[in-house]
Length: 75
Image (cartoon, rainbow, N blue to C red; front, top):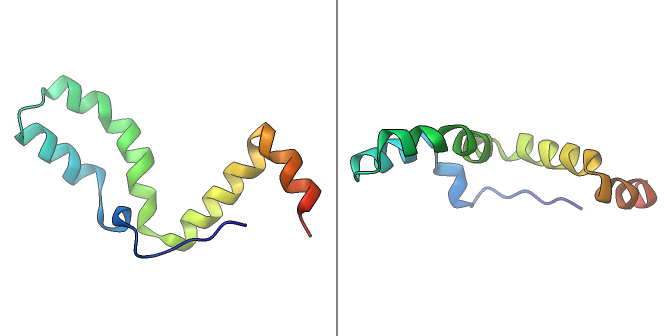
């Protein structure tokens, strides 16, 4: 079972804001740019809890160890 929620701190986070704050605090532009892709992938999808649940379910369906569990218990 995947349960989404809307009171998560990630709901109000964005990669753009975090990357800008990193740069303003003296982290090198190269290091900030290195983190851009991972932060965009991890933070930005959390703005829509319903879509996030759909994405997590799809991810669980495609990861090999979880596929057997999912398909053996799915209705």
